[in-house]
Image 1 (cartoon, rainbow over the protein chains, first blue to last red):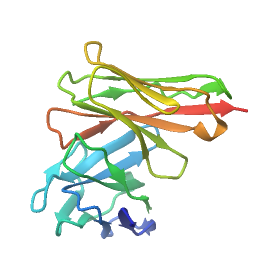
Image 2: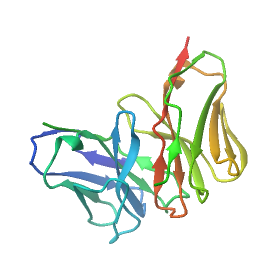
Image 3: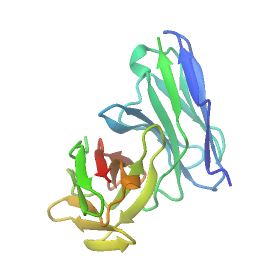
Length: 113
Length: 111
């Protein structure tokens, strides 16, 4: 049972390049989330998907897009990377919203130069 | 903007002591409360969750919730060096789908 799987683990981009972070969960969870974590800032919600077919903005959505491809997969796209997007990105899933805990993937460490 | 506040620490305690971690939140509508532990370079892992006022115990860990005062705390009894990590507090608002995190408290347990 893999839980939440994120790829890639590490990525270096140049300013202006694009990339997609992939996330898949095998726990049959309805809700999926993308967070970024910066030193001293805690985890900030970028986008979330309460169920297949729906997505909503979180606290820091600018510069990102998401796709809930199916119940298992939720991807995060950076169309034109900026140095301010250097961060550690975590995907998470939850069984049925906020009364059930988040389960996190192992994270993607992204550096934009 | 919903706010979750934690003292960044570091909080240093000797091995075997009780570590007390605190968290306050701004949204009175917050419904669910979670404590996560995060080791350096790793992803957060769930320690406990609490929904109702009062105490909830799980092994060496006790979560305490006071909705009137808008704070939630985590007590770690018989602290071990392996408890040294950053502890993140998370709350959900009236929109159950959004989890808001504090910036975390770094705990050091000294042998």
